[in-house]
Every structure is written in structure tokens, then in C-alpha cells.
Image: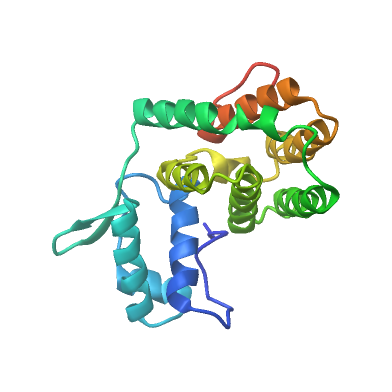
Length: 225
């Protein structure tokens, strides 16, 4: 099976960073399942680069908790238990949903325009089944939105929680109506914020984050069939 994420690199940037982002996306999305063994030589062959930047990327991912070192074998993809994932989702809902009331009706035109551009990138990436671009654009949107509260510590906390999240069903959602609906929710959220509908924006954010343990974990949701 051809991977949408792991293949020959076409980049003028850092090979290490590009490999790290691609492998992280493959782990987050469930393409590399928990327990999967990864080695620098094998991945280097698939990326068509030398083993050095791949090894550096895997060591960084080990520091971030995505993989653990398996002596004389390589790196093993770590597991986030169902209970841990539910706790991460709950904390994210506590942190990310209430600020929507604070931001509702308070965002100026440049801020709204910037969010619209990022939301459209999410929609386009979903339509193109571009998984790595989708994850990157989704992260950019959510962290940008929270940054508008002016609370840098909040942004840092949510960034860390997102890095601990696993979306084990996301790789199988490419091309599905659910992924399109989830992507479109970003535009709906902006509409609510622009209209000053704080309570509705907060509610939508809670539902949206809840997809992590629903659609993005390969499970049905109410109203999602």
C-alpha cells in the first residue's frame, strides 16, 4: 500500500524537519499504528535520503513522546490509551471552548481574514486527501485562534496536548463526508465568532474537538451517519 505521507522527499528545506513532520503525521493519523517498529535505514530508503536526517528526526520524535527506543531494533511507536485520549480531549475542551465567548464579536477584519485563509487551507487539504497538509493547517488554525486571546501559555499548553493526541482513524477518513464536514466546521466557527454568537461558538468547538474520540478514532457520532 502506498503511503500518502512516507515517500521520496521533494523539498528545499531541512530534510530532518520534513521527515519529522511526515512521520509525526503518520503516527498521529494512525498510519503508523502503536507498536510499529521504525528504523532509520528503512525510512531513509522510503524517503530517498540518507539515514542521518532520519535518525535525527526519530530522536526528536522520541523526545516528543511519539516513539521509544527499542534496543538493537530501532524505534517503537508509542501508544496513547483510550483513557488517556479521552482525558486529553476533555482537557482540550476545557481550555479551547470557553475562550470562544471571549473572542465572539471582538475579532477585527484582518484577524477574521487570516482565519478564513487558514480555514480554506483545511478545506482544500481535506478535498485533496492531503493528510499532512490537513494536520498542519488544522494545527495552525487552532493555535492562531487561541493566540488571539493574548494568552501565550494557553497556546503552549494546547500545542503540547495536540502533540500527545492520536487520531487513529484519520488516515481512513480521507475522501469521506465526515472529513469534509469536520473541515467545514472551521468556517462555521468563524461565522459564529464574527456574528458575536459566543455560546454557539463554544458549543461548536466542544463538538469539533470531540471528533478526536469519534470520527477521528473510527467511531460513529450522533448525527454523523
